[in-house]
Length: 295
Length: 260
Image 1: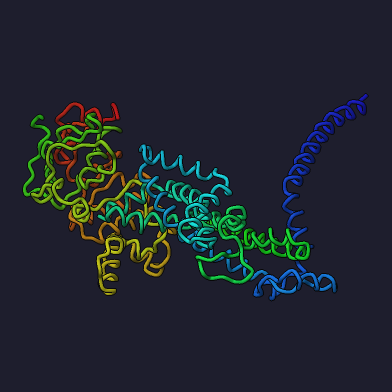
Image 2: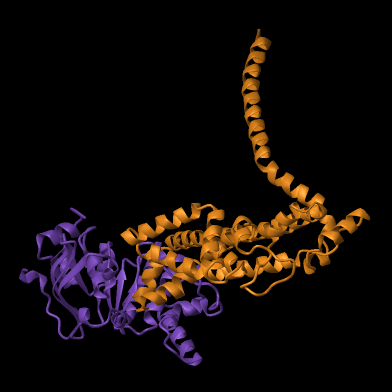
């Protein structure tokens, strides 16, 4: 009798344990499903792309189709690299940041200082809408504004303008959110020392929220680093390094698109993607670190 | 206004004449007239919402941070109407210490003390700065504790030390009046008693106006007390007299704990 009893209670508890294990298993499986794409992507990029990564890949221009074809026919690595794309991307991202950061930070400060005012709400809503505008549309707009009227042709400047519009709402939002998180008491402390208002913002609030601002900016940069669509309509591309902002310029994502369209260049797709992915990943990790440091 | 609210003070450093403060026409402080004597500790007491913090903040015009707030009447610092001078200039004469310690988190202890000069862009020589920092930290009895770690962040200090640092920051400018808004309410009893001792010493050189919730604190350290209720000044006089022999029945009820 007793043994049956014991068995029964054991049965009961093992039933619960089984259920617990089932749920735990389910959670683990679903988590793996969530992270598997990124793992598979990185794995594929490394496996396919590592062979082409070398110093030449970073400092040489893209080869022409004939060079690539010969190399592939002889079973060799494709010569040359994507220096034109790396330089173009850096150039455009730096200029886009130079345009977007001051405007975005100042707008963020304005929104923070005027909570609830009609103009601030309007600005905030428009900035949110801007964030949702498809990037190709921003490319079209920049094409109309800059390519058609300022540089009279495809240019790095046009690319930077479209990228900076993309970045702007992210910086506005992160600036406002960061400033909101700073305790009111710090502002009071500075004001009570007779510090004028603009200096309170510049010398107390911004330094205090600096890592938060930087996090938002880095995330904004990593967002525009991989943008392709607006650049197709603005920067167009170039097979050599170009430092003239008014001339067509290449970028890493543009090159990936070009390689995709040229059967001889397929070998370079993966290595270019790997480099781009690594840049974005590093920026993301750095901004995560900064955000963690803040807490 | 009854006779009971007026204390005879000679050569007041600060005198309020019919001062009223309103948020959107709701009066938080009504017709307060008070003369505050130099080199004393004056405590403002009263139950929550009686307008004591509003009154204190109006004295260095921090209340102007809020919208729709208006003041009527006068407040004179050494005979000059504070509402007619630039707020920035006034605040350098009227230091303020807040409820919770609020050192600047990005600055070292040294920079926190000298912050008033630095943030205002007032140029000083290194030697002068060193002297100001040492004097201010000695004034708040913090020098011995932090002299070897002046360049560490102020936020590493304990709560009580941070509050003394904030007092040092206010003292660095050699203000005439120091306004304190419940400066010990976030501190433990030991840190509180250190700050209380400090205030009694500081009145040799400064005039202190202190808002406090804590009646025994007012009794321990203040020379004059103000009792406020529902925005009105109920009674003002020497602390000793007020605690032993209050004139207004409301003061007596508050002091004996019948409300508050």
